[in-house]
Length: 53
Image 1: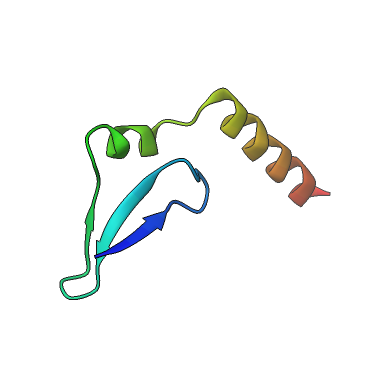
Image 2: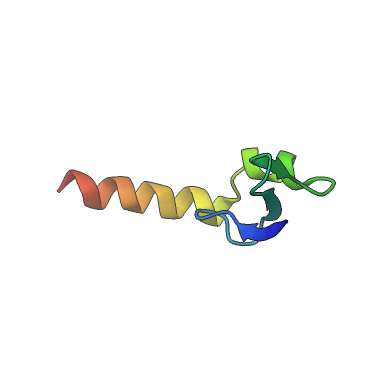
């Protein structure tokens, strides 16, 4: 098992199995992955705004 972190939400860590290509989350991490915090939403808005220019 390899310990990984989400590239957009660094506080979310999960395990990846190279043998079966499975991804394993601890309790609550998968739900947290689908929900962005206020700061994460703000960063995403800034990235979109900068990309449009």
